[in-house]
Amino acid sequence: MPLNHTAALITIAAPNFDRLVCFYKALFTQETTAYTPNVYAEFQLPGLKLGLYRPKANNESRMANDELRTPHFALHTHVSLCLEVMDLEVAIAHLTALGYPPPGKILTASHGREVYAYDPDGNRLILHQGIG
Image (cartoon, rainbow, N blue to C red; front, side, top):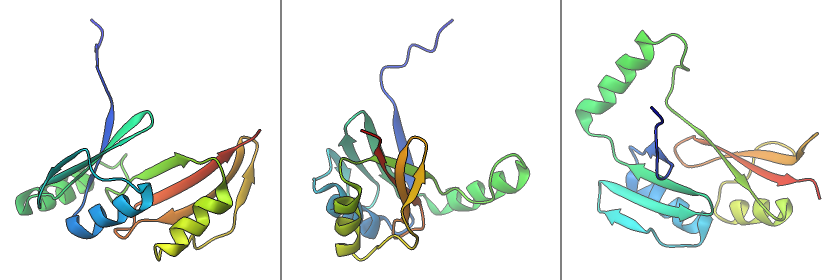
């Protein structure tokens, strides 16, 4: 029997909820599409919804224990959010203006150019500009 899903979204645990909501508002230059103060914020991006949630205190310890019991997962819950951009240099300038410049150089791969950056909680952002 198929999954029959109707949408997909990525959610990021944000212990520093307000700071991360402000960061993504500035990064995407848009307001949230759903917002519950100190609990949940959601952004509608082209092709994806991004949710930020403040983990409850008891969930933070549970998540840490889950990671330790599950050896095939990384030892942290951070995600890599890959954002396809039209102009990599403009995107880098925008991120730098927000106070979060990419720490490394632009990398060239067979599928285009990209640079790694990080949000205030250490989640990796991959800014990618495709070929052509």
